[in-house]
Image 1 (tube, each protein chain N blue to C red):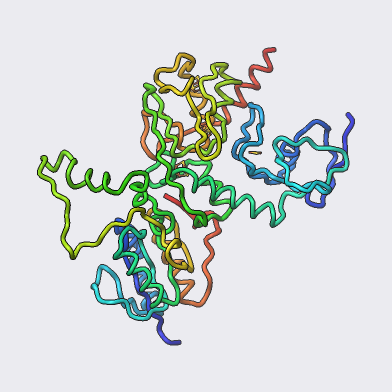
Image 2 (tube, each protein chain N blue to C red):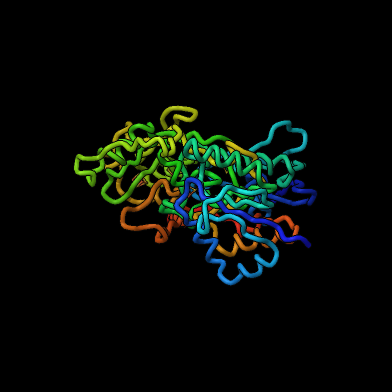
Length: 180
Length: 235
Ligand code: SF4
Ligand code: SF4
Ligand code: SF4
Ligand code: FES
């Protein structure tokens, strides 16, 4: 059997899902027998090649994320939304209750820790935040979701192992499905 | 005792008339999902989770407010019912702001349990992200409207069991809110006795005690039924 290719990407999230991914520990050796991990934020920042499965942590919060997720969709046979932020925006979506400018002002100018010297970041190389944070499925077609904040290492391993063995994972078992 | 014959999911049952379909199902271990139903207080059919199909009736009826009738043919497990249950659950999540990871009820929440039961892994509807108030004016308890699903268990418990009627309901549609007295801060209520019954009746992280953090929530909705039973025995 030809080895499959996996990528993992980190959009608007806290990296907790990737920490959970690392928590699969030595079981990663079982996975790399079946697949190569060709891109991962912990490894490098190169362009996403064509892959079989991409795990995407985090929600879509900016113009850059939007471009990235569309590119991911094009390059991946299978896109998996990993974690509550990717699936339902979770903590990253909490800014949606407010106006974007108020949120930015609060963070960069008005926060007490800024000592009244805060400035709005404005470099052209920086990403531009979108008005509203959205889950992946509002921008692209998502093939599988793993909720949880973060999803447990056991569930991540289970899902990957099923896919790599050409089986469809089933989270409807109450012990596997979890939010928060 | 006179009984009537009914059929649930193709099985025949002899039951006492006057009971609700929900009561009969629970007595016979037939699973019905509920959220606004709480033993000890009146049923109002608010959440629409307990819907059942009855032969000859076009629309789905709520099991908690529909009484059994002679020769009723009831179904509780059709694909149509399951589809509605899933939609209802998704709308609970989409309507307000449920951020389980930072919620005091995480892991101890009836809404989460419901989600797991209907196999809800994501929400297909756009989130509304309304701005909701958090009322922390009461010395001991918090009311967080972000997590309220409008089951009105708190309203009925406060009214029917405590007799205080601090809570009521204001507005309609997505603007509907539970209010304290005449929409004033809970801490300024002249009716609330601070008994804590609403807190125990609330199925979500909407009402919670200030003295705890995530993981320590221990609601006991069953105390409402116990209390009402004890009262009934004294009469
Ligand atoms: S009330 Fe329940 S479903 Fe809502 S955020 Fe809290 S734990 Fe999650
Ligand atoms: S604490 Fe008791 S009296 Fe006060 S609102 Fe809740 S149920 Fe009503
Ligand atoms: S506060 Fe709790 S008990 Fe009251 S209506 Fe909302 S969810 Fe139901
Ligand atoms: S439990 Fe019957 S409508 Fe809510």
